[in-house]
Image (tube, rainbow, N blue to C red; front, side, top):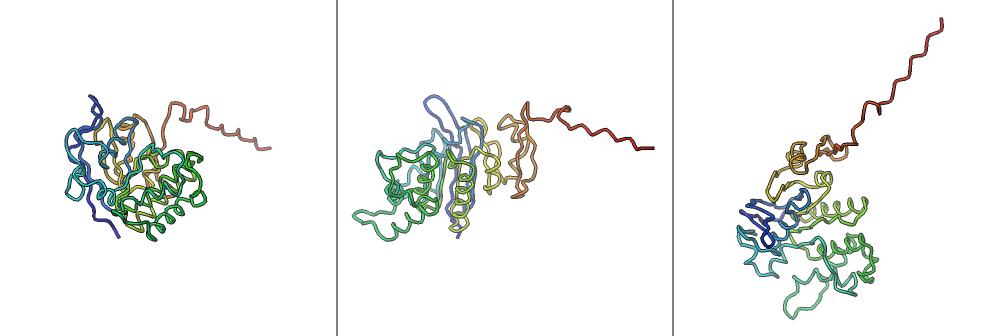
Length: 282
């Protein structure tokens, strides 16, 4: 079942101190789809995500959820609809994995209410989905970076929101776990209709897993649309300053970006020489 929640940014300008990071940006998040936000370092991706989840107040413009400005929605009410996994979350010292994941249930706890079977089920499902069940009794401080990242994702899943925002969810993960996490988010999207918005650095993973890609350049919206519409060699050059070839991904049929570096192009001397023909005996 697809969520019907609408989320949009309207003429959004964001910054820190005297420095503007995002300028007059309009953006609509397609409900029930997976959106990937891509762009060069320091282009405003994480800043945009923080503002859309109410962690950063706009200088100008507004973020609107179901017709209401997110900064006017009570925090707990917002947390039942929209969840955020920030880029570098910090766990309380000494907390166990199970306790940290359980904190994802806080928005669902009412005054004087007790932990119930529904909370147990949600936490157990989140641990299982992220392959962290065996870590439940361990302290988060003891985990590797990849294990810790999966635990934070489990906490976000336990929150069971209709909109899930993740800032670089594949950070610290090896190639296998990157694919597992993105498969997990896709399963969540397909099974529950959860709207997923995530910042990704890997353009090819974004193209493979996202229904909708938003490309930022210098704090402005450069392109938005399907992977085929956004991942073009012209857009890659404009957004990243990188020359590339775009081919069809043989696995997904989506576009696949092959970067062209100064030392990555086959030179004439790299071409294998053809063997000289063997003279035919007379």
